[in-house]
Image (cartoon, rainbow, N blue to C red):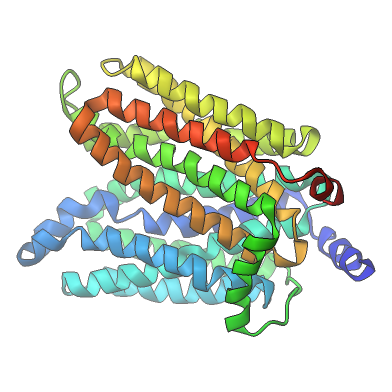
Amino acid sequence: MSADHSAHSDASIHYSRGMLLLLATIAGVSVANIYYNQPLLDALRTSFPASAPWIGAVPASTQLGYAAGMFFLAPLGDRFDRRLIILLQIAGLSLALIAAAAAPSLTVLAAASLAIGVLSTIAQQAVPFAAELAPASQRGHAVGTVMSGLLLGILLARTAAGFVAQYFGWRAVFGTSVVALIVLAVVVVIRLPSSKPTSTLPYGKLLGSMWHLCVELHGLRAASLTGAAIFAAFSLFWSVLTLLLAGAPFHMGPQAAGLFGIVGAAGAMAAPLAGRFADKRGPHAIISLSIGLVAIAFVIFGFSGASIAGLVAGVIVLDIGVQAAQISNQSRIYALKPEARSRVNTVFMVCYFVGGATGSAAGAVAWRNFGWVGVCIAGFLFAALAAWAHSRREPAAVRQSA
């Protein structure tokens, strides 16, 4: 107990607004790499006409790589210095981006994209790092600040990639990212402190211990299922929005859906505020409120199938609800077992992205069979699932000991 307190005191020495902004930048710049290729698919189809039917392998490989990276690399933050891991991943990611920029075929590009996905999980070191550096009373705010950087990276990546590709070509998108990562690496070397490993487990046992954490920590299971259901609702909406906007009465292209991502930046801006509320009132109350906002958003969407203003309002409500829930959930799980924050985060984020994939698939099925109203009902049902999962609170004895 005293050793843990001493380690936390050492970490708190480095806690500052500037350090949080650096970690937020690390998260945003790194995670953006898994979304850069999405606006480039038409350009890639033109560059590799013989492989045009397989062009979807590029974003699919990136997403698959990210899931693999979360499982196989993110837990290493408990075993090794997170600063070293971040620098090594930046170096590897830069090489993968160079390979993508120079790819002579779609096969090479897909392979490079897989590596980009694996190595872009730098963000999964930055968020637990913030939780480690912050005092317990400010942990929610710290996580929220870093997550706001990650969310801005997700939201603005497509816009940035589209702009660079329009004027300089799709290969320049990957080259520009390499330059950004090199600058980031220099700042990391100068400013980011080292972290102290909290586990001595061999790599195999480190991965296996995540199953034991799931069994041991009721709060982790509840938070993971809640997060998965909320992200399923979020992904369901965004996967179908382009299809809605393409038809009557809108007749808008994919760029219009991209602009809705900028509207969604409201959710990213709300993340630190949600963290502060979680610090003051506890994460459970904020998660309950957030689930309610997600449900309300889909009610708004249900009445806005022909209204841009209604869709914009719904997007703002949805993004604030989703981001506030994620920040509060992560603040909650990081307090469960401080010496295993990277592994706890890995369990949560893997479940989170499984939920996202489930939501995207459900959205496609609902749209094809029941139209926009069916999509909105499905989103509301995911919010209801999140409410059920969140209501399954841990026993009183566990809450008191935590």
